[in-house]
Image 1 (cartoon, rainbow, N blue to C red):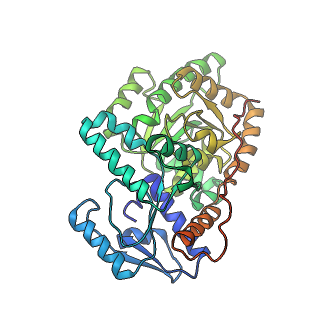
Image 2 (cartoon, rainbow, N blue to C red):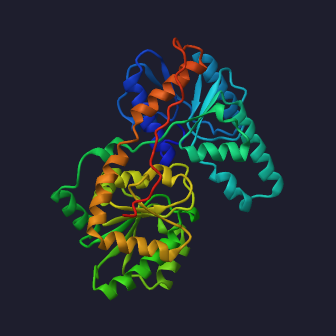
Image 3 (cartoon, rainbow, N blue to C red):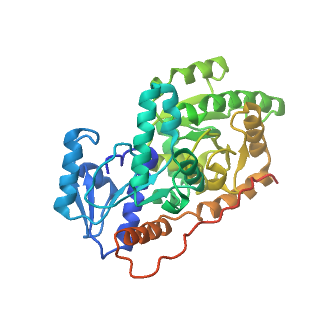
Amino acid sequence: MRRITDFGVGTYIRNIVRALSRLDRENKYYLIGSPEKAREIGPLAASFHTVPFTAPDTSPRGYFEFRVILRRLGCDLVHVPHLFWLPRALPCPYVMTVHDVLEHMARTRDHSGMRRSLHFHLTRRVLLGASRIFAVSQFTESELEKLFGIPPGRMEVVYNAIDERFLHGHATPADHEMIAQRYQVTYPFLLYAGRISPHKNLVRIIEAFSALKTELEKDDKFPDLKLIIIGDELSKHPDLRRTVIKSGVQNDVRFLGFVPIEVLQIFYDTAKVFVFPSLYEGFGLPPLEAMAHGTPVVTSNASSLPEVVGNAAVMVNPENVFEIMRALHRVLIDQSLREKMKARSYEQSKRFSWESSARRVLQVYEEVAGKASVTPRPRERIELPQKAANS
């Protein structure tokens, strides 16, 4: 519950808890963390209880207080919804969800060899101590096996899905008027939404957009096309502003910062193309969120993204600016391709369901806690097409 306000992890916590609340009325659940954050989940079944816990996770006080809470409650199982590194002698088994292992790649630059090695080995101990690990994609499962040597039999691929609020239909004329009035958006635009960090590849998005504007001028198409970037505050990322100026698109790139989901879904629905050529994703929810609105997606052929988008998106080499530009140009101009992608997008977004993911999570809970009354079923996977929409 500690990370419920984070981007991907927060979406996971909110939706898996809601789905479990709908599915399971027999077991008792304790949501350990901030009561204020727990309220963001919304109404839950009577078997769900919030237990206040505000001590820092890595402090001695937090370490012992968490164990005391588990003993007092008599918990049979703990589910930690994200990767952590500090081993804990818990009084009951634990399962954990791993969204990605990007932290262990980034730390090769940020820390000394000794700190990096210690962090790695402690994380591996945590992973090996888990009764079961939920990996949010087959890619993440393979990364855990390759990087940490976790046996595949200890892991389950349980996919993420989109927040149910993205399923509430298309933008209305009133919605379009709202973004025109509040955000002064009255022009066609490409959209990026998500965290702003180096692996998201925003510098190349801006460079590809600049090249695209030049190409569109030759065709006399979309003269007022803009690029809208929704995510963190720009002040934390001065390199992006420098890229905008260097690329000569100061008047055509807008950074809107954070927007609520209710507003974000309008931008998804209105965008001409959603562009997401990320270098690394453990799952990659934003392309799926855009697809739920039928918006054409240009994304990476790297990490988990082919697994997530199937044959509904145009995939590119995320390190090739001109390949990104050409894909954006094609998707903008080719109306028959846009229609095909729209139909495929709706189908692909329906392949992922919080209810089906929660059912598998619940089954694992029962297996680990020793309460399964039936023989465990074979591992369930969603078979997803891997081919990009090239025709």
